[in-house]
Length: 450
Image 1 (cartoon, helix red, strand yellow):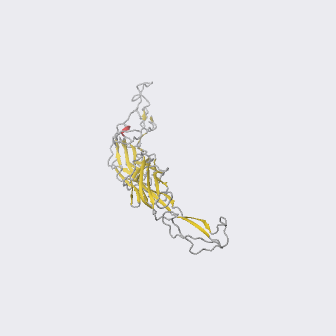
Image 2: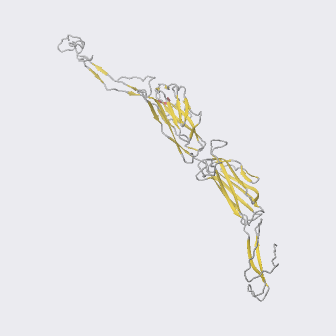
Image 3: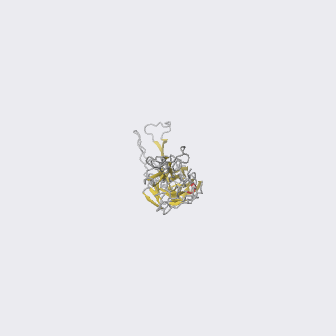
């Protein structure tokens, strides 16, 4: 039994050959006299034609060889950790951690590459090597701080590939401790604000390492498991209604609006910098805020500036909502059957504060196909009452004709009752079309507005 120690400078994945050879002699002693039954000695020396046979070669073929018992040293291994959490919104930064396990000895020409998926962008300067991994979730197997030498670690980004190289081959200390042979390569990626990144999209990330195979000089590649993240977005909804309708619906009446701002059923992340505004339409005046309430957050303030009602900006976590109630008076310029539509809208962002990498509003309303489509609107219309007219027979000139029965020459007095909604009725014309057989008595029409 032979025990050997692998040299500290051995290369990762190196195959170390080992075989055994046996030689022997056909007679004991130098000339066969020790136990030769004849008691005689060979005239010649061992290996000669008149001597004992040995393993020196040729006819002296007393030799044996074993099959090879080669040993291949361990190869580098790589594991990509699943990021925590696994869901990210537009403008978020994802931290990826890659565990690299190097066998004790020398790993030649090591390069670790993280291949980012499309629509995730490497954050320049974020790539780093961690040898003290107490702040990183454990690799498998768990390990302590790396005991080797990582010289001149450099990170370079090319497209979606972020490569880690070393100016000298990494040397892992030969201490027979498998728990201090790994380091972490950590980098960050930005979820880009591009049209392809929409709620529910999945992005798959891969990592690999390459090194020089010491046995044939080729480049060996080891690939890590893939890790996925899911894109999520905040989606808001506005429910606007008339909670207090004017009765009657004409000038001087008051209308009360209630607006609820909340997350839609398909919303999956918090909304930030939410801003609600409502331009008071023509036909309404003297608008005032009745109150603002909220669920899940402190209620924002609301104010009216000129003809625009607006709230202070607020963040809206999932499950929270804000309700704004305000009223306005119908002004004297409204006309019969006029429809007054009050439209309010909300905008928001995917990131808090003034984060330029987040998604916001400005391109289109939600769902209209624009990139920055974080904007929704809701309307609540009502109509001014219409003008009405009624006609009846007020009197006839002969008392002896019953009811509406009249005779030739009798005078009929008609009453037209016109009801106008309060406000302005432009170009009012009242027309009575007399049927054939009746003749208007000139000057008989009078108007009574009392």
